[in-house]
Every structure is written in C-alpha cells, then in structure tokens.
Length: 239
Image (cartoon, rainbow, N blue to C red; front, side, top):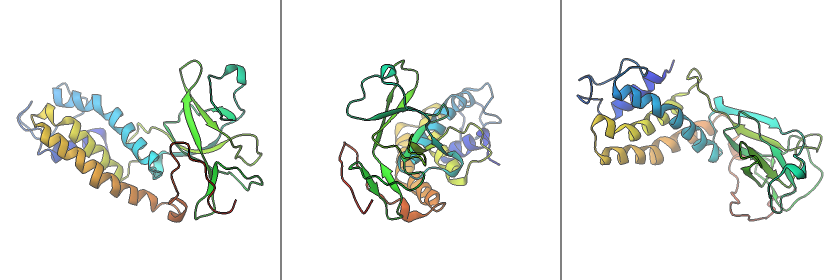
C-alpha cells in the first residue's frame, strides 16, 4: 500500500537519494520528520497530487479512483450571476470538484445543438466553461445544454482530490513521485538540470504512460474525441 513517505522516497530515489544534504542517508524515515527534506516533501505533496490528478483529467484520461458523476441541480438565478456572456445556463459545481472532465448526456436526448458533438462510442458531449461565481469563493459551470435524464440540469463527469493514498494506482504513484523529484532536486543538492530532467520525464514518459493505463479502464473509442477549445462550434456525427 502506498504511503506519502514511500512515494516521496521513490522521488528521492529518482534523484539518486537525498545524499548528505541533511542526515547523510538516502531516504527519509517519515514525511512528518523535522529535517528539511521531509518538511519540503510534506509541503509539496498536496499540491503535486492535485496537479497530477488535474493533468490527467484535462487529458480526458482521469485516474479511476478520482472520478465522480453528478447532476448539478437547479440553475443559478440570473440575479446571483456574474457576467456569463452568451451561455444559457449556470450551475454551481459540487464542493468536492477539483476539475471537470466532460459534460455529456445522462440518457437519450431529443434536441440538437450546434455546440454538441458525438464521439465514436455514440455518447453526446457538449461545450462548457467554468468561471468564478459572483462571490469569488467557488466555480460556476456554464453550458447551453440541459443533459440530465429529466432535461432540467447539466450532467457531468469530474474528478476529486484524494488525500488518502490507499487507492493510488502504480501509475499515479509514479506520476506523483516523478513530479516530486523535479520539485525536490534543489533541496537535496541537485542542480536545475536534474530538476528539468525529471520534469521532462514526467511530461514525455510517465504522464503519457499513465494516460494509456487510465483509458484501459473504459471504452477507449468513446474517449478519442475532438477538442473544441477556443469557442469553435461544430456538429460532428449524427445527433
């Protein structure tokens, strides 16, 4: 079972160990220790974990242990909204939402919309956007489509932060450890070249490998869909 201490020691191992930077040993006894290497790992770990989870979610290949589905309830009243441009609907996101993966139809739909498109698996997806709410203490989900079964709300797939390491897959451990190694290089006496090498390893090797592992957990054909960033509106396939 993965632990924060174990994952950070994997990170240190990727750098050749902590060396003589603090205690003269290659690894830490606990991430809760008083030495500077342990304290640095404790400080970094939550941010790196969230970064890795978000990186995979925005690639539409989320870790299985982080996925949630939800209908978003009633739309936010117009008098409680900031400016939302041309979007028709605004919904509050769940409190545990770290990043949205996709909006799609919970069941069959009977309407067509220029912002919607079908993937090869026949699932209907929609364009959407997230912005800060009026109070600035949360995010709103903006869409032109009501996609739940009752056609009165949006239905989304999203990811949550997972502070417990119990459900971490091997690919998730490797991603976190590699990015931790990049951020930890200076604290254990390595130069910026070592940090950049670990960053490149994360972006070009470890992260793509994790994406392949993650998509093996669902129908792959339903994930190879076009990305319409920048506001492009086009219908693909038959809706």
